[in-house]
Length: 259
Ligand code: MN
Image: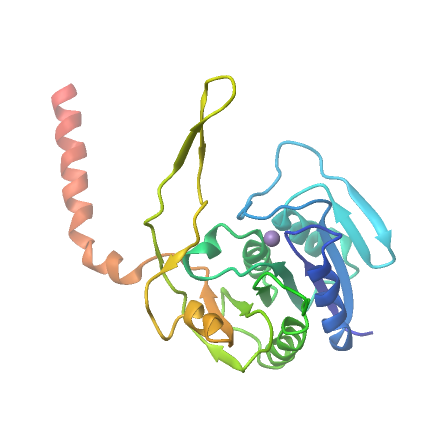
């Protein structure tokens, strides 16, 4: 039997990018689609723990879930699929997921969830498509998936793939870029006289870094960034060794005083 591949997204079961990704990976295995029943962009790594999840079978190997992208990956890997997948592919997101923005992304979080469950995973996003649709991202996704299936990935590592709009000049291995936070919160007053706020309204500004994903995509290249789920800063852990004694001393002295 062909290996099972799970495709999901955060734009919802009806998104064009989801269908394009499923079709692009069809030659590599038996593709199952398990995706949210509606748009779930920017939900990050949220899991639904306080209400029941419902699964709707919309085609033989296609399921919609009233939950988040991470819910979908959990349900699929731990129950819905006939066997554990060899790959979790999330996307193709309508819009890039670059640099510091990856932590908000439902698309990237789905791939993180796959990684946590021990399945090699990748997220694919494309700059908001115009007339070209997802013509650029489909062959890039297939190329990266093919290589990933042969080579595997280091432990706790996933791939974040971003594709520019229009013609793709090539593929670059990159690091995450960094956002410059200059934009202000927009404050307005509603018709009932109450203030409301709008965040993330302006266009993002990025630090200049030629090796970053943002530079690659702006230059017309697809970027492939390996991400690591071990968020521990091991260097800082070493450098902060004396904090332990100092913090415990403070704790002890407070306890003594209270007695
Ligand atoms: Mn999205």
